Every structure is written in structure tokens, then in C-alpha cells.
Length: 185
Image 1 (tube, rainbow, N blue to C red):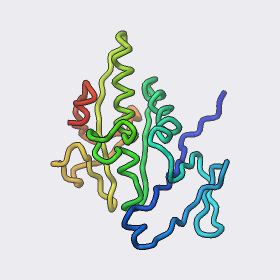
Image 2: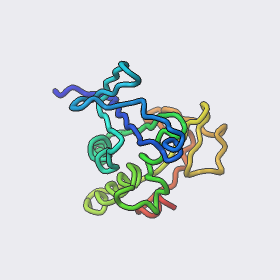
Image 3: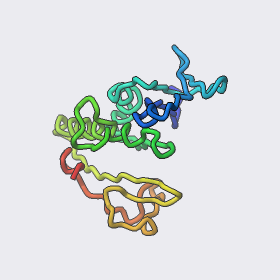
Image 4: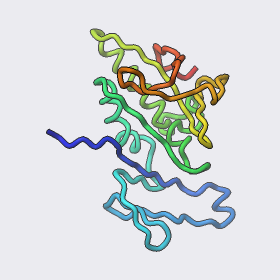
């Protein structure tokens, strides 16, 4: 039996922003070549499951980290992708690629790539019924907000486990989606 690893951690180092270069700031994190390690400062080394340097492409991050999870999801497994980092660290870019709908194919982040792959698989599997519900939850200062249901107060949103062991939003009103474009709208 193969060993299950329930959590994998990836780190992506973003390049300096133009304003950071203008203010003569320097990158303080570097990737150790041919390893899954980064060094912060002069000698603080940390090891991760995946390490992506400043020049990593969106498709590289997706293919390495996310595509295997999407394939597991399509087989019926629960999957969670969690982006963590301080403001300005590149989470939005990696997840969406800037403005999700308008991004070029090269710039598209992991969310539009996963959505495309999910609906492509659904279209190819005529003998299986699928129901797709989508939520996009932000945790900020210990408050939850569904970015697809902006009118919902964070005080009204709770993540709970139901009697069947499924974890999700309490009183889930996530919209059913039947196409890539219905997810984006």
C-alpha cells in the first residue's frame, strides 16, 4: 500500500516588484539548486515538497502541484488548495493570474486552469453525472469571506463538518455551475 501524504507544501518566490527595485530592495530568499530547499538570509534553510523560484511559470506550478489534485478530485476525493502569505506575497497572482478572466493563457493561475480541466473532463465523461458547486473563501484577520458571495457577512459564514464527515460551508448556498464561464460570473 502506498504511503499517503495528506498535506504537501509548496513555496513560490516572486520576483521583486518594480517599486521594490526602484527603492533598491533585494531578494532575501534564494533556492538551493537541485533541491527542494530555500535559504532565507545568510544561512536559514527550509525544505518543502515543492520549491518554485522567481522565474517559475504558472503552468509549471499547476502541472507540479495542482493537476494531480484535480485528477484526484475527479476520481471523487476531497481536495483543498490553500494559499498562505502576507499581503503582496503573490497569492492572488498564483491563484488567478491577476484578473482571472482577462489573463493570457500563459499568465492564468491555478484556479482558471483547474476550472478548465474540470469542465473538460466533465464534457468527456458522458456516462457520469456531475454536480459542481464552487466557493472561493478568503480568511483575513480570522474572518471568513466567500469571494463569490460578497453580500454575505463574514459573521454569517461558518465552516462545519456534517453528519457524513463532509466539511463545507454551513447552509451552503454555493451556486451550481455548468460551465467554465458560469464559474467566472
